[in-house]
Image 1: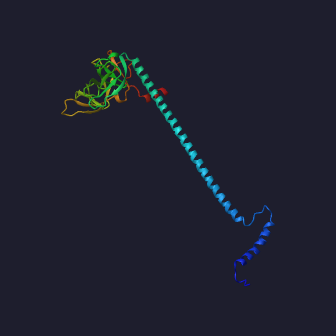
Image 2: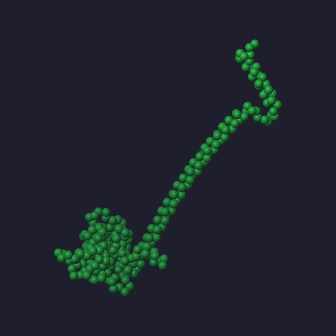
Image 3: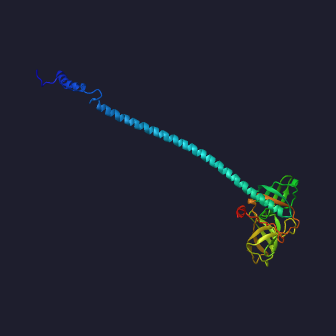
Length: 298
C-alpha cells in the first residue's frame, strides 16, 4: 500500500488516532469543568448577551426619559394655567383697588362741595373725528337737562348736549362747537375756550396786551352759573402774538383727559360756588391713584 497517496480511508484513520486521546482526556475532567471546545461558543454568547442587555437598558432608559419629559410637560402646562389664573385674579384685585380709590375720591369730592351734582359712568366714546362726545348712563329720568356742566375730578369735561330717558350725550370741550368762558388764573386775563381738535382747544378773544404764558392754568369764570367759578379747564401750551392778529393765539391742553376718565359729575346747581376764594376749597385737581397710594402709605 502506498501511504503517500492520500485517500478517504487514510484521513479517517488519522482523525480517529488524533481524536481518541483528546476524547479520553476530556472524559477524565471534572463534570463542572468546561470543555475547550465550548469556550469559543461561550465567549460569543457572552458578547451577544452583553450587547443585548446594554441595548435593552438603553431602550428602557430612553423610554423612562421620554415618559418623564411627558409628565414634566404636563405639569408645566398645569402650572402655567394656574399661574395665568393667578395673574387674572391679581389684575382683578388691582382693578378693584383702583376703582375703590376712585370711588373714595369721588365721594370725598362730593361731600366737600356745596354744589348739587349727579354721578354717572361713561358708557362709550365717539370714535369719529367729526365730533368729540361721550355717552353717560344718566338721563332725563335722573334729572339731567341740556346745557348742564359735566366735570371730572381733574377738571371740566364739557356739557350735556343731548339728554335721553336713561342716557345722555356729552359734548366735550375739545369739540369745535363747544365754548366755555375762561380766565387765566395767574393774570385774570379773560377769553373763550373753544374746541380745536380731539386733543386740544384754544383760548380766543384774548387782548394782545394781556399777560399770558405757557404753563398758565385756565379756570372757569362762573359767569353762566353752569360751571363753578375757579374750576380748572386747561393749561396753556403755546402763546403767539403776531402783528396781523387782532388777539393772542393761545393753545390749550385740557386738564382732564376724557380717554382716561371713567366716572363724571353732572352739576345740576352750581350755587354760585367760588373755588378760588373758598376758605376750605375742594381741590379740583385730584391726585392720581399712584400719588394717593403713596400718601396713604406715608
